[in-house]
Image (cartoon, rainbow, N blue to C red; front, side, top):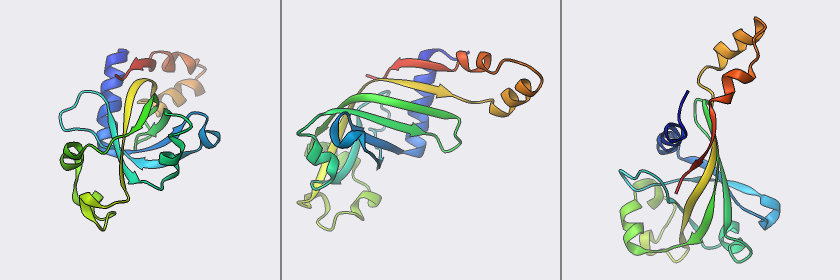
Length: 163
């Protein structure tokens, strides 16, 4: 049975590998979320999570309504799911842009790091709920044999601090 800290560590590792999550603002645009590429500082244990976008992105415009954010994540192998809560802020700190800049990001901004449309967002993570599903096939077989599937999942869900 993984501890909450082990689940948080698995989440951060999966996010570093998969990088795509759905990000939305609480109460803005009916909670609409959009896929975003998540970046973190090398060697970082927790948040914040960074996103490069444009100043005309609907999330940036909605920051005037709310900065409470929720992000949803599913690992590539569908063995880990997470819902993350925190505050989303516009943060065009040049030192951070320089550290996170890479060829993939550069392809989206004709003006490079000085592109007037460039907007860096920072998600200051607070907490999340993480679901781990490492043995779904095994759990399915146990259910077919009359076992209660809830027992397999009780120890693989946790509310964790992601600050």
